[in-house]
Length: 206
Image 1 (cartoon, rainbow, N blue to C red):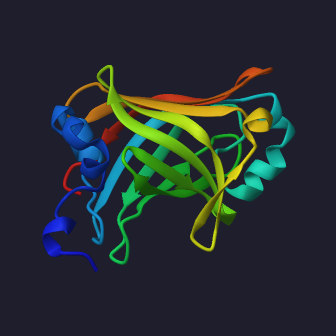
Image 2 (cartoon, rainbow, N blue to C red):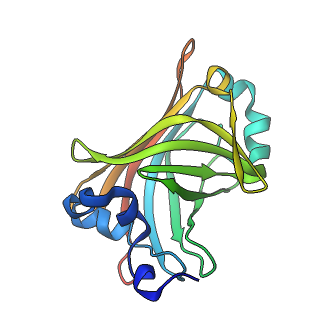
């Protein structure tokens, strides 16, 4: 367990450094979780989900891996819980996509701060996405830095970008409680093969 005073500092304040003080109110609420705590932030929103190319081709693998849903549907209600863990400094995502044309789908992952402004988002079976996390152009941006496989605490690079493309994400404040977001995966040959985008609102009193 780390020092109590350190635990009072939000996980992403350490990641963003001086940029943390530039964040608009909704982003401070969104990323308020502290390490080694039971902090919980919940957001509700609606997303348009699009998949094509290799994502559709390997859809069964994506479903099995429990990653982004390889589906096509608009106006999908989505609830996301951002959860801390009393035993570590991980930032956990618990997403529920309430599809209208198939059963609801849960997509869980966790972000782990590795160094500086770099994080790795790890999904089921240890497959991960390495990224740079920064505040740029009045947006939170997640920039692709490759895929990895977590094994015995080590992150082994995986040469999957040519197969599955490069993922990037962006979030922008709308008002004090709402933000827009988008996740895109672009393939060097197929172009934009995956996207979900929409708006979320932070629940009060969480």
